[in-house]
Length: 139
Length: 287
Image 1: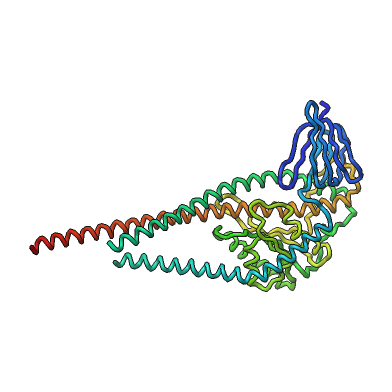
Image 2: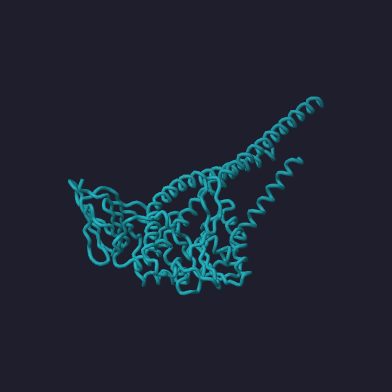
């Protein structure tokens, strides 16, 4: 009929799938409205609202933080991002990861000593148990 | 009766330990189920993005994205190493390191320096003792990792590659074969192997907006993050499976220990009774 199959997925899971009469998405060069028999198209999406118009049902609104839109004559796939993609934010996240590496390596000393101590404790306990067992047998 | 009381106490303590390990086993099993579902849920996205890369690659034969160019000389190699945050999961992390170290040596012998990006607390603990350059780390991502948590660490490595600090980028993680077995795997992330061309032959092509080259840039970055995210989720599945098996073994061992302690206890009790009777009989005979 006059509906188009819509799939919205993200890296972390499935978001929506169903039939729609029209899909409106915030493409990089301006909002696009897709109906059935659209020419194949591939475009990037800006952060914004995706509207899925369905027949006899309420219109669906989804907010996405960006992603990719793939259009084929009878199917639309939206690959939604799970995180806001912003160079500045990314740079900040990268900086944090770098700092975390240094921090972790510096503080690991105490934590590792703790792990070491725990290891020794487990060994000592095992030795003690073995000794107890032997003692029990001898008796 | 001195011995019997001690043994009884010990049985009680082992039994409570057994209860704990049993509970941990159950918890790991249910988390494993959830993680498997996550792995399944992530698959459609990964498949789609791979086929999109194939198309874009074919549509832009002249455009040489830095991620696709293979460099002949290798001066520095990057490794993204995924480990668990917590222990009690058998030899999972140790096996990974055992596989990774010869690989690192191999590159060092060829005169290449090494940059590490560590995801997971166990990796940080381990590599602290070795003198290797760690450029990024992210720990405590929980059993429910999010792509957001990874972006920082991953982009350190991706930027390193596009700026030419790193000439190769590898991803190291545990592969989930089944509940009983997990295998460490080292895969090359960058440069990207161009996807198979034959499968993608079609008579039609997309309209690309803005252009195929610009799109390729964004898609490749997402692809990398997806790969790493998938590996992290898979590693969590491995951790849970390994933990389940380790805790099952611990529960069984505790059961064996209780059995042998019970035997000891019965013997000690019997000995005490026998002794008492002997004393009574001896006393009666004396009278």
